[in-house]
Length: 256
Image 1 (tube, one colour):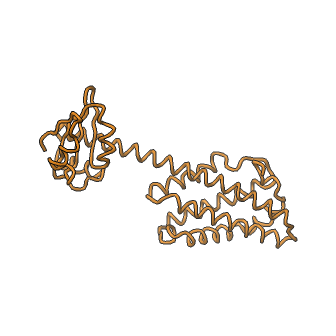
Image 2 (cartoon, one colour; image 1 turned 30 degrees about the horizontal axis):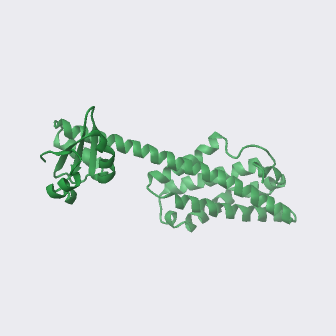
Image 3 (tube, one colour; image 1 turned 60 degrees about the vertical axis):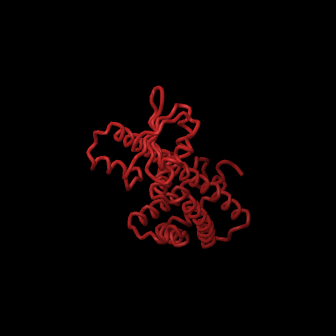
C-alpha cells in the first residue's frame, strides 16, 4: 500500500457522493453514536454537534483527497481530530470509545462510498480493494490525530494537577491560609474531607518512594536539603503503621 492510496480512487467517486453528502453526514453521525455505548447515552446538544462536525470534516476531506497525492490531514483538518481526542480525555472517558467509533465510521464510509459508485456505474473488485485501502489508511490518520489529542490533554491535566497539589502543600506549610481557602484548595485535588494532616520530614533520597507509596494521599514538597511529606489522615497514617513503614528511612513524623 502506498502512503497516499486515495490517489488510485476514481474521480467519479466525488461526483457520486457529494450530492448526498448532508444526508450521509447525518446517517454516519447517528450510526456511530448509537453503535458506541459510551456515546449512546450522551444527550448533550454540544456533543451531537461536535460528532456531526467531525464526520462532516472527515468526509469532505476524504473526497478532496480522491485522485491526489496530498497528505491526509493538513494542520487545520488535523486539529479537528486532535481536539476531539482532547475532549474525550477532559470528559474522563477512555480512548476505547472514540477508537471504536472511528472503526465504525470506516465501515460505514466503505459501504456508502461503494453504494454511491454503484448507483453511477458497475464497480469492479479492484476498485473496491482500492477504496478499502484508501479508507483504512485515512481513518488510521484520523485515529492517530485523535490519540495524540487524548495524550496531550492527559499530560496537560497531569501538569495542572501537580500544580494544584504543590499550591495546596505550600498553603498548608505556610499555615496562614483562610479556612475557606484551604478547604477549596483541598477540594481541587480531591481531598474532600480535611480532618488532619500528618507532616513527615524526609531525606531527599526517600522522595520518589514516598510519592509512589502514598500516591493521592500524600503531598511532597522538596527543599534544598530535605523534603516534607504531608499525608491525609487515614488508616495508613496512624502512628503505629506509619512508624513501621518509615522505619530505617531517617524520616521524622511531626505532630498533626
